[in-house]
Length: 118
Length: 112
Image 1 (cartoon, rainbow over the protein chains, first blue to last red):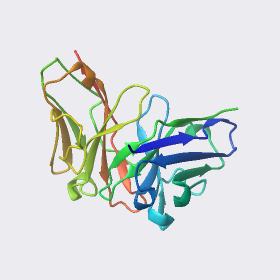
Image 2: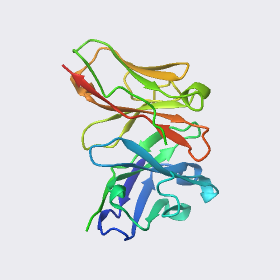
Image 3: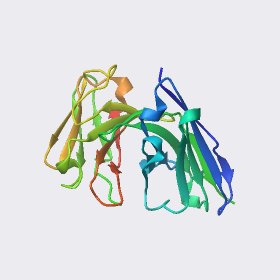
């Protein structure tokens, strides 16, 4: 069974850093595009970043470009999101998801909460 | 970055049919058959319900169907059931330069 499990969320002060991880199992991780999608409390979904197989291409939403870095370790079946210079508006549940070529997300993790507050 | 427009809420009685619209532009919905729909219950992760406009993943009830006309995609839920009460989001590929995908604003479905 395909499974994604996020970790690494927590409370961080504005300007701080956090690294999210997503452990994948039950599928050939290296064959998939992977994504991070977030959801602020009481708000809708927002795409954050995508990474192609082998990390050959990476895309970011404008609001995080230059502050967040998506990466993957195919040997460990893991996806990461390094988040620097965090702002209050980055507070959200962060989901990792597998992304198909025709731009749909077929599997999602349970999410990890990031709270940016002093 | 502009989101796809969905109605904030749609409601219906059990066994009725409802339709949720998702309106974009020729750079996203109108230009590609890459629209997907997701169901999200409170406190849970989103679940894929429809992909590539009208395809249903294995295990999704055939009460859910998708379609597209011009710049507007639609999700129809037939034979509405209590467990269908949830938030629904559409997503489309977009050709706008710095974006890969654009998300809908979300629709709260209430079963009366």
